Length: 168
Image 1 (tube, rainbow, N blue to C red):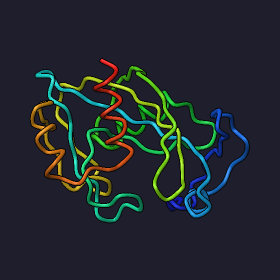
Image 2 (cartoon, rainbow, N blue to C red):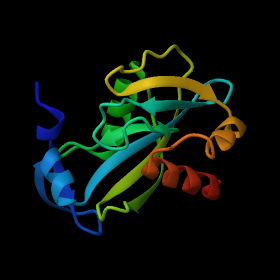
Image 3 (cartoon, helix red, strand yellow):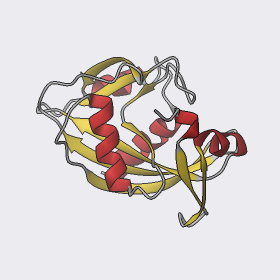
Image 4 (tube, rainbow, N blue to C red):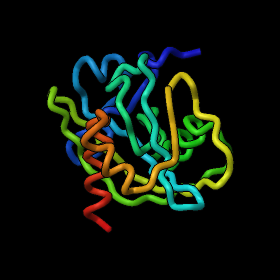
């Protein structure tokens, strides 16, 4: 099994064009621009899957997020990564996603990555990936709004959430 830091990622330029590849650990250390997919998942009651990231995560451990997702592997499309990440993190099979928008997220530490935001509906049971998720629940938008001032949220997910709300 490949360790997460050894997974090879595409490195991209400011126009989201692939300019090379590097192991994830190097991408993070050198703050190379890369790609990630994010999926907002709603249930039949329109509630949103919200989770707390595992304490062992290398980026933003223990923070909350309204998106499931992760980085794209070399040669992987945003659509492929969105489905793969949603299925892995929710512990489901057969999910389909719909792309919404993409933006370049710039972190305060000088790193940057393209976030391709998708949405999906899942009405069945979930079995979240324990290595990725410490806690989860389905919350309404009002409940999320109340938690934004109470809980620490992952910064790129928070940026995507505000863009999502503004775009509706």
